[in-house]
Length: 289
Length: 121
Ligand SMILES: C[S@@+](CC[C@H](N)C(=O)[O-])C[C@H]1O[C@@H](n2cnc3c(N)ncnc32)[C@H](O)[C@@H]1O
Image (tube, rainbow over all chains, first blue to last red):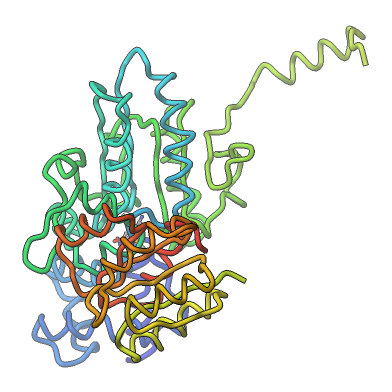
């Protein structure tokens, strides 16, 4: 592939999904896009790029973008965020939403569904939440992964990474060599195609947002932009969860870590009255200390 | 160092499992059937047991029931590791006192996830 073609593809991917590729990722692009090229009747990536530049290439661009996404996911990935969800987020939100009896949760890059379904299984385990309404909205840019997510079917390999056997017994049935989630859990999650680079204010407000292992592929300005808009979708008393290797360092003061709850964040509340008060008390000389 | 007893009639599986579990810092003992395994447990109760189902002499299910009836036999965490991959077998094993269940084939990630699940790693 010529440097020009590689540059063209990088630019396309960055615009479309936010994906930033290092200059040494040519092999990755080749291995992922050659099958797309062949399917489109192109022998080489050069031919594919030519086709992408021609008019009417929109569907092909979508396919190229989806083919480059990294979709790895597991049930209860990294465990700790889910423990936090069970031990901190749910009990706290049960008090804060005691009147509404409704929880809205967003899995913002849900891939093949393990993340929102893990949350659904956890919520289902709370007998004290009986009668509550749950909106679990799960979104991803890729239609392929959403199709699989909606089916709720997983391979034997997939149900063994992170899913406790008790949950497998309780919520899955065996269909051929696949394991299928019960209709009850599947119905708790609504899947929707959504590109995080586009406006998502239509989704409404959430009590908890999981945005895990997707921002790592973006550059800093894109990350800040997405996080700023996620912050607007989060209730002021809600919770935010990132991937295990991700932090909010360098994105301003949008989110603050919850003390003693590693991996859990809450929206930073700006106390606009605070400096004024401080000024008054300073000039008034009323400080005890 | 935590001790893990690997029980499987296939020496190949035992070798693979040993390599994985040694990587997680376990000291390994091996047994090729349930009878041998019970003898090993009588000598020294391990912290963890990776247990095949179908074996000659005494199978994994019988071993588990005998183990749980032994003095101190409630202590080891038992993770089944078998080609039996239907819900009926899984339910039977769990009722007999297994802590987790691996369906073969397995890899390092699966063993790690399951051992983490029961608090061994
Ligand atoms: C590695 S998976 C993470 C899945 C899950 N959150 C987890 O942590 O296991 C990343 C997902 O982000 C999706 N993705 C990438 N760029 C996106 C974008 N711009 N908008 C929405 N989803 C995107 C990919 O399609 C992929 O399914």
